[in-house]
Amino acid sequence: MQDNQTMNMNQSNKQTPYWLEKYSSAVTLGDMEIFVFPELLYALVLANIMSPRIWAWMEEDWAKKIQGKSSNRRVQRMKQYIMDAYDFNLDLDTWGLTTKAKEMERFASIIDPDILQRSNALFGYEGDKYYFDLDIRKHFGLDNYHDDIIPYWKTETVEAMDAFRNKEGYNMGAGECVSLSTLYAAALFIVGGVELEDILLLATPLHSQNFINMGEGVITNNRRIVTKKMWFNGSEITWKAQRAIRNEKITIVANNSGYIHTMYPDATIDPDSYKKNIEKLREYLTTKIDMEILSNFLRQHSDLQTCFQIRQDRHGGHRYIETEKVFAYEHGSSYRVNDNTRDKLLDEIDTYEFYAEPIQGRIVLNNFEDFFKQNPNLDLNEPKDLATLLDAFSCTNAKARNVGQRLVEFCHIDPRLPENRNFVPSPKIELKAEWGRERILEVLEGMRETHPVVDLAFYAYRDLNRTDWAPFVKAAIERNPVVIDALRKSSESDAVEKISSLKAGSIYDENRMAQPDEVWNFQRGDGAEKAFAIAALLKHRQPDRPVKLLFAGSKVSISWENQSRSLESTKNLQKELEL
Image (cartoon, rainbow, N blue to C red):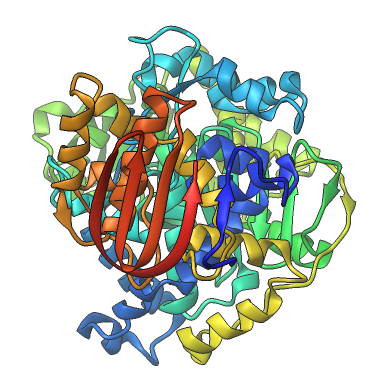
């Protein structure tokens, strides 16, 4: 940091344009910015690890009670805390809108626009047939806007997620999928006791989630945690959790050793770490086929339930019922089709629903119990085993002819990962949760000069006493449309007054700084933060006029033309800026 000197943002040549674009993106952390600069994904994880917020969870009773417990127990309890404390938010108005043309121009010198458009949802990508059918723009609420309009969808730090409690219409914290995945990654390390290397961040064009290499494997999906058993339970919520991996290419994979990206030829992730975790992910995404899995499959693919009937042995004879009726009764019962409670479930159904004879054209589901006992080790990679399974589904029912193949697809997902890359490994970021926050901060501070991801993390962390100011200022002036749009009908003097009169107090701890749209969204800010919000408004209305900012400890002043405003600050910053 260069204290007590003037920085002219229009003439500064201290850093290259690429550097400034990348490092200012670490401040705003938009989804499109993370896609273009994949180092930012893990930089946000580190910023959350550095934050005092998640470490404060360790002082709460629930966290104290799980210390010393198994990793699985800690992770499951942590999941419940996150579900209770945070909601999923993908509201278009939260961080405002921009245009494809503007962002394409911004990134034109960094990435091939055609590749960007084919790979990123915000620039035209609509995924495979599933997403074309879904109509992506309508799904995200963009159908009311011109085709060139896209959202910023900035990724929230844990502080911004917590601050949603102050926003009208919210009664808890909130964040979008990247925010939740990076929150989970940091919390898994701090609270869950999971090693950083075993936390794999997976980003697709439309979603972000984590794979955790513990036990049989775990996937975090927005607020939830999905074990392998849950992944194959056939429920609607699990089907939604599967959509991204099942239907999209994975564009970024990252952990503490680096990243691999679908667009870039070089990968910085450690190849051994990558191989180990991906092999575990593939195991997680594959299950053997047995009676339980078949029943789960039919629960998910309800259209195929009409191919089957269920037989119940009763009073020395047999009776039969349509499978779809039995699954319908599951909704109001604690019993299930797929386990040893099936007979109890059938006993709850009125007798008149059953038939005395087998239903013509339907496969008896019970027959597969003997089939799986006779074929306990089916390997679907073996053509002979696959043929044996498919033959078992032969039936006069036309639908039944593709049941076997769809069952195979249910039991195995082959993740579409970035193709072979030139591995140029970077040093691993080696941290231990037992070190505590202060020591981790010291270790990371010592790595900044040699590790670009760590350096970017400090910009995502937003402490202007530890970073160059230029990226923060660029982001504040250029990428905060919400406050500008909210005050567009106000006169300049009224707009300045409205910002100045917001509730005092930053959403960020210590000397860290909120961006203007965070100030406006959460209707509060330190004087230093309000000064930047005023500056963003003034520069938007008249880009060429000079605006001066003077940060002098507890006082911040902003002056333009023949006007000025003085504000109180607790950030203890020392700087003079001319914009």
